[in-house]
Image 1 (cartoon, rainbow, N blue to C red):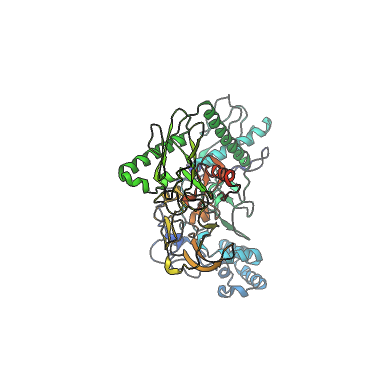
Image 2 (tube, rainbow, N blue to C red; image 1 turned 90 degrees about the vertical axis):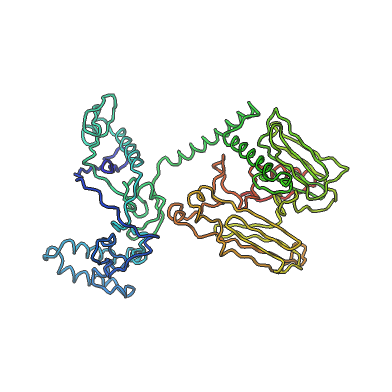
Length: 584
């Protein structure tokens, strides 16, 4: 199948070089034995970089593994390569040329190797690159048999080849399309038979006599060229680093005509999809997209599961699968509660019942979305004000505090401190390598009062008589599904915490609990194919919005239904100030 591929080069309208060669049929070779973990377990090599034993091995064809082959070819001391000057290289080459030059009766292949070594070492830039990267087997692309040819992708290359060559054919005048690849009105198809005369431009394709330019990195058919070093690469390897000649390890830079148009087209399609969804909502308040219908099913499954398994204990149980639908904030005298109701419909009522110690919110013909016990007291002499949107999907409540000025640590009984509050009890800073959490504590707290526990999925912080936190890490579902055993959000062994003396904003003594969550090293795929960009919460695309990326590090802090803006508005109307959390 690979023999059917061809390489077309040149600008549109220009001549396209076309080479014809016979490709003999060969029986498939046995699959070479691979060396695990990026060639880490390499056999011992001689000074020439070859492994010698009595049995055939894939490393028999590997040369110059230690990066000294060019020095050895010229007879120079590879161990003192740093002291080898250009004069030494030039003198060694002239000495060998007198003996091995083909005009002197020498072997042409041997002299070609000597000439290549001279060309590399005499050029300061190429020599520096050779010394730095030749021994790095991971980035070597000339190890035949050791790095097996990758399978797949031929269909993609065929499509790209056909598109390029037909585009060039249409741009040429008809009088210049009489021979070569093009044949005027009566074309020739793949097998050489005559084609339908209705097609104006038909490409000559003889699968058995086409020359294929292969990718210098992986061996697939090449489709583009790296502008930095001129290496012929394929579409897959545009996301993988390579080096060539005097150019050290670098990311490929290729010409991608039409890519900007494609990206703009995708944005326009996404914009149109959002506009269509809004139009459908105006026409039918009960309209649900496929994603929203999925949310409805998930909500019902979780709600019925908790009712069946926990019974009355569900009122004092914090479950993030239901807690993600609400958020809250507070002022000196009131608590503001915002709720997204996935099963809310325009023609269905919302049941709301509240007492000084309990609250129930349940859509008609649906399980309750909130049926919890308050952690703190609610005022008896003032009413709870409620509002709901026209489609009954968004619900807000203003809950008066029993003790004005009291600061609520949690909304419902059984919740961790600060759970689902827009103003957390900590400050968080995050970059590509670390996540740092800082918590202000009273000055009398010492290290014996603090317990911090890290796991692969979450983190628990307990400060005696002061604070209880339980935070769940955001996880990339696709990466975890692909490699569940090795996928980690933090490096548990490297993460740590400390308790230090500090001074707060009021210039009072306090303690600062600092927790440093260390992210694991970049994976092989992130280095090779993602240009060193992590597949973490900072770079993940949000559903329904391709332009916006990023999630908060803790799932507990995520605002999936845009409730924070409502709460900020309610707080500002009540007290004239509000806390504004940083968007992901």
